[in-house]
Amino acid sequence: MTDQQLSVQPSTRRDALTFCVFGVLVFAVNVFLYLSGFELHQAVWGLMYIASAALFFLGVAKLIEPPISLMISPREIRYEHRRGTWHIDWENVIRFDIPRVHRGAELEELPYIGFRLKDIEPVLDTISPRLAVHLVSEQRHLLAAALRRELASGGDYTPYYDIPTSYKTASGKVYRGVQALFAVRCEQLRQLLGYDLYVPSSALDRPLDEFCQWLHQVESHRHNVDQL
Image (cartoon, rainbow, N blue to C red):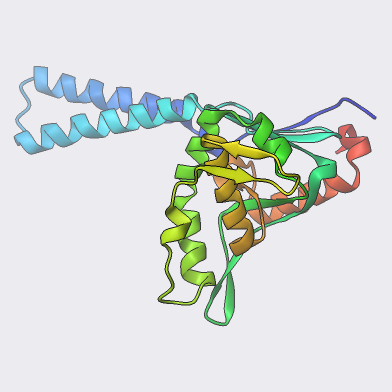
């Protein structure tokens, strides 16, 4: 089996330098006009300073994102985030696709790629605590959307937001703390949407449907992944 890896660059890093440059440029123009005695309303000066800061810090936020969001090898898929990583073996993947929720008689795609696993334990054993906490927080809106669309209206959502004290896997292993919190969230999303782990579209380098098709090709030819 080859050790060749495929890498995916997140779309969130696109135009990062452009945002930084424009932020600095707007600030420089603002300072130049001010020193030149150009008269503007105080609110306009404030808006220009806010705009320059917003552009610059947005660019910085893009720059601090990891240059690679996914590393795909013949053995595993690794998700890279500035708060940590998770990885899953291909042999542990049952299926992956774009999760969907019901909107009336139609299905609406959510901006994620979902992975359904045979066993969540390997992920719980290796995920970094900071990333686990971040994903639980980041996916609150995903859980909310799933609850609204997939559960009967008027249902009690409170149990879905309770903080668990522990989580017991099918093998009998008990997790506590951050691992238990993350495990319960994965289980909830699995019940509602059919998948355990979710990668947002912003972490991908192409549209969701194209990425999903490409990943299926990688899966089919993963022993020759260097040829894709």
